[in-house]
Image 1 (cartoon, rainbow, N blue to C red):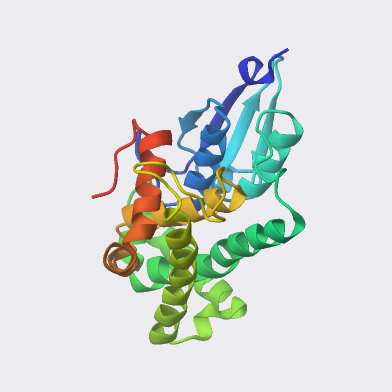
Image 2 (spheres, one colour):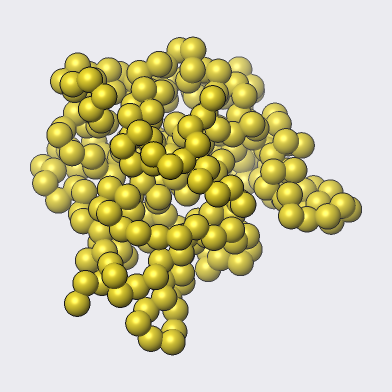
Length: 259
């Protein structure tokens, strides 16, 4: 039995943007993860509180039976799909050292840069982010929900540590992250032919790190609540943008590309 054809997979992306990238890096990460293995899915809107873990993305897997399975967290979803034979294991061919590098890159993006991006979006550009994330809510519900979300995010950023930094310090640390990624990609690009995708670890095939890096690059290029990061990537790191463009051309040809 081919599980890929026996199951219906719906990714809840938290935004009504047909054939467009969302502002969430974790959504694009999961979408690329599926496309790298040729796994078909449909896009649904959804809302964070409706998901199993209260965040985007989450998926509904409809089995060849009346019941459905709900999964959340982009990393856990991918792991589950690999275990079920729906996705190939991108890191199976890596040695121990490269597996460590791969995990380090993912942690850099998801456990470090993610907090800096959240600060830019929800603190520096609050109204733009609120109106996008809560566009389905009417006034005054949007105002109330926005205030509650803002307070919660500010508190979490303070507890995590990013909220204790100055704007200048956050900008410096953000630039350092992208400088590190740019260094890896510049080395990889030297070995790639014209229009051929090149990968973070410099191999011939993508690894899990690529799904994470691509997700964060795209999210910052399309998000109107991340003007500083968008300008930084576009002006200072053209190779990073080219990396995302080539992946877009090969794996997301029907999606609208960033301007």
